[in-house]
Length: 256
Image (cartoon, rainbow, N blue to C red; front, side, top):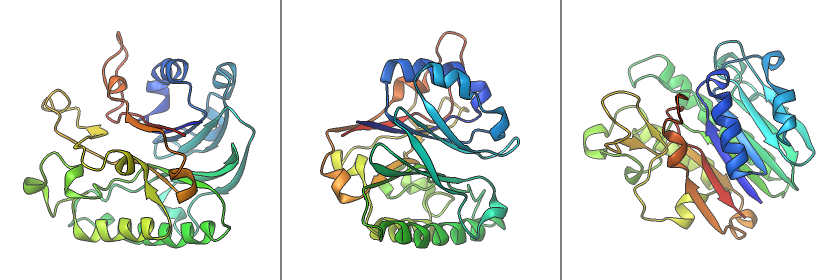
C-alpha cells in the first residue's frame, strides 16, 4: 500500500499536475490540502476516471482538505471539533483497513500576529482530538501540512530562523504532544538524519538552492510504522512540468 500527502496550493491550478502524479506514482490513499474550492467544485468525475474515490471538506477560496482512495472510503469526521472558525482543515475517513486523517494546520503568519496563539490552540485541540481517535486501538495515519519544522534538522537554516514562525519552541512543544499521543513520524523513522525538505518558497531561487523546510508529514500508529518499506519526498513534482507550475510543496509518499 502506498500512502501520500500533498499540499497542492490550489487544486484548480494544479489539477493536471495531480493527474500526472497519480498516474505515475499510483498511491492508494492520498491526503490533499489547501484545495481552495468548495465541495461542489471538486472534480469528482475526473478523478473517478483515474480510479479514485474522493471525500472532501472544502471552503470557498481558502483552506480545504480531501482524501483520495483507490478503496471504498467512508467519512468519519469533517472539521476539527471546536475549531470550526479556522476553516476546513481536517477530514478523517475509513479506507484501506485504517483510519486516515489529513490536516492543514493554520500558518500562524508570525509570532507577533494574533493568529499565532490561535494556531497554538488549534494544535492543542488537534492533539486532544487525535488521542480520542487512537483510543479506538485502530491502525491510523495522520498526514498533512503541519506548518511546523518539528526539529532543527527540518529547516535549511535553523540558526537564522530559530524563534521565527514554524521554528518556535511553542510550536514544537505542541507537535511533540501530538506524536507523544501514539504517532510516529514515518520519514524520520526511515531517514533519521536526512536534511530533506518538502516546501520551498517560490521566491529568491529557494528551490534550486534547496532553502526549504520539512512541513509535510506522514504520521502513523506503531503497527503501520512496522510495515514501513520506504518513504520519499517527491522532489520531482516540485519541478515545473512543461507549462504547468508546481505547488510550492512536494508530495510525500510512503510504501507499506
